[in-house]
Length: 241
Image (cartoon, rainbow, N blue to C red; front, side, top):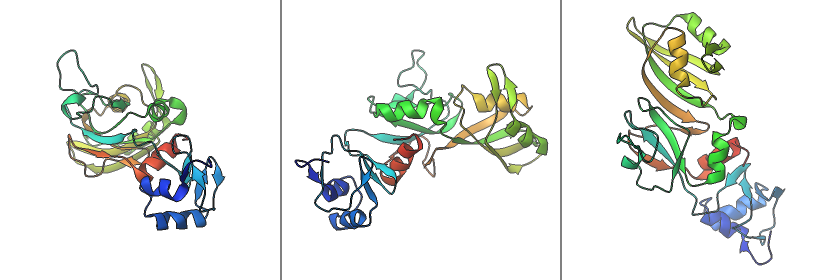
């Protein structure tokens, strides 16, 4: 907190938490923390450049220069801003080259990819210690047997070590193919495809639908949207920010 800073309700309003009157109500209700302390005094001033604000336990991003976006990566696009081999890359769907992607999806896979210029957020999302869960909807060849879910939950042995899913749900099945939803926190290369290959069900299509609290939703292939407000706060909270 700073005697020379900006009034807290103004900072919150500028961050998109509502009108100043609504932000004053948040403060009065004890729902706002500044640098880890609950603040109820309306005249409190803070320095937006250094203050760490949480509302209802969720971090509020005050730096307007920091941007995080959700991209629906189309199949056939590699997860890099420039591909030396000339394959379609992220620059074909994201104009801002200052953004860097968090994690990867192999070229054949599609779905949710996060891009940001917030280095600390990107580092924490990529670090194994935070174990942010990722969810995939996977189409595989053949009708999967009930034992497959049990086996994937227990874990299978891959060439780079054991791997297991946290959640497994059969969505639909025919004699030709099955639709399965899995969630796991491993970020290893092509791990979902390799796990299904190991249990005898090659992947036909793989779509990542969720990273932590951020969902793909109805975002179309190649489209982007900002991750902000409560959604961004929940993502930051998931990695301890």
